[in-house]
Length: 67
Image (cartoon, rainbow, N blue to C red; front, side):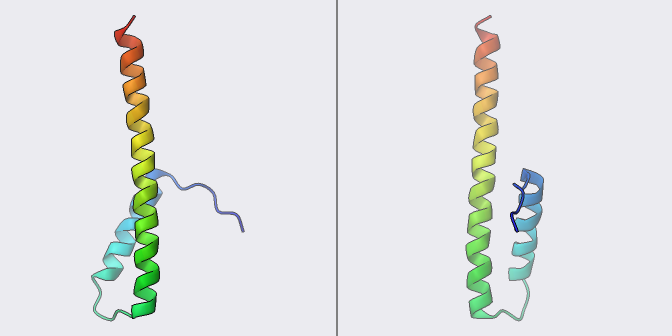
């Protein structure tokens, strides 16, 4: 099944859920490693999305500053 690209909001919710899971008491090492790896991947996706938005804002500011 092909998963649609997640929005920033969806990624942030997933990251919050992963963080909450780690705050639990009963942690399995293998499951924890998998969730940690997913959390790192989600955090990287969030960073890329925020960077793209930041670049767009800079582009817009420069475009309208020069007019």
